[in-house]
Image 1: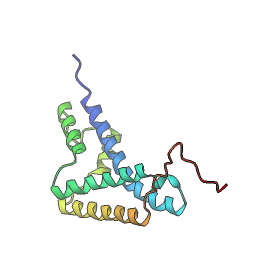
Image 2 (image 1 turned 90 degrees about the vertical axis):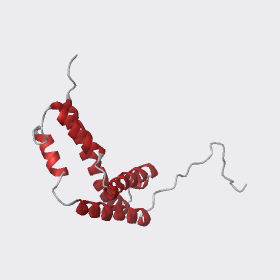
Image 3 (image 1 turned 180 degrees about the horizontal axis):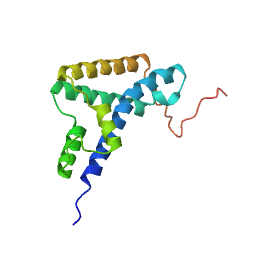
Image 4 (image 1 turned 135 degrees about the horizontal axis):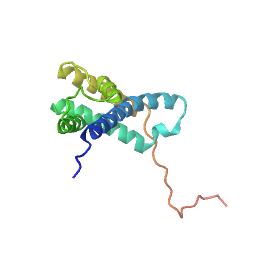
Length: 144
């Protein structure tokens, strides 16, 4: 039976983690700029709810002192591959350097909380669009 490609899976988890970070940070930027430029997609309920949920999970993890499950999974996969965290390919190396910093835990908790408050402020300032679903058989009264 062939061994699973643990290193490749670890790199994939790292890339997904990076994409989620981009979604959280870039999502807030898109919401603010998109509302200024009248982009309708930035206020779709699904986008805004996913964005709020993503940062809420990060903030909650930091308050509870929990490690990110993606980080834990990536480290486990690297251990299964028999490699250390710093022994990865070029892209994985730079993604790792962009995602992980050395600082006390309270610094990250504070940063996540402030960012979460910014997302909540954007939710209040630029509320998500309410779905205007009409019943299929509903007709407008034309006044005739």
